Image 1 (cartoon, rainbow, N blue to C red):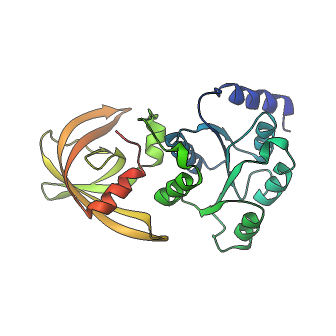
Image 2 (image 1 turned 90 degrees about the vertical axis):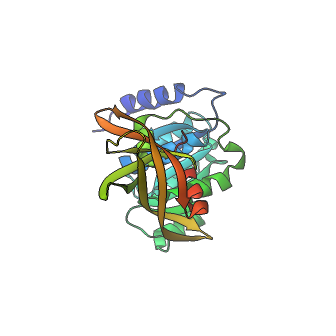
Image 3 (image 1 turned 120 degrees about the vertical axis):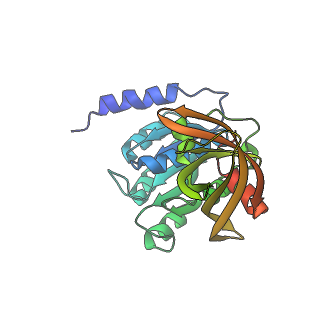
Amino acid sequence: MINVKDTGTRIRALRRDLTPSGGPVGLVVTDDEAAADVLSTIMRLLNFQVMRVRKGSEALHAITLGPITLVAFDAGLKDMDGIHFLEVAKKLPNFASARLIASSAVHSEASAVAQKLLKLGVDHFFERPFPVSKLRHKLREMFPTASVTKKKRLSVRDAEALALPGAVILGGQKRPVRLVAGNPERIVIKGQTLPLGNLVRVQLKHKQDVFGELTSLDLVAVGRVLSSTVVGGAPMVEIEVQLSRPPLEWDRMTEALPDL
């Protein structure tokens, strides 16, 4: 049985953690932890304060407590479907000006569910797992004044939410890694201990939005190992990028990662 009193207390505590001058408020509504991590991280990179809940009923309670700028919700919530959630939320006074993103690991962008949600006022519908660069690009379009103006300090979990799988080539050996942060000049990878000063080749296969279409790109960089450490029991290496190709796509790919 759901304890309404405990739920209300928890949601009010989440709301109290927000600060009036701390940026717009984004509400993430899903029980998919990986999806919530990606959404929360991108919102924070765009200067949002983020509230995370797992159920539609919790989200509705959060909305009644104050204005919400952006709601990102699952089309198939644990206690109600996204269409029902949206129909109820639209009756709440704090919801009228909220921008909306819906997503699903089951329904496609062409599905009847997606089309119904778009007709109900959803700005964008995304299939999961998220195309990170496309998601961030659409959010920047929706909130052009919320772009990052300073470095954001993210938790390791937040950074890893946007991590890209790849490999490094050292001495002819291919080793799996994850790219967790970066900019066009430097990157941080997780998963391997590499010798300081060595040149390594980093290979990535990355899906990103190119002229409105999701395209898979093979990206390569050559760089020198600047530092090597262990964080939370996992090796982390910082690499100075000396050559990347294709350079434009490499730059665009690193825009979807936490900065250094």
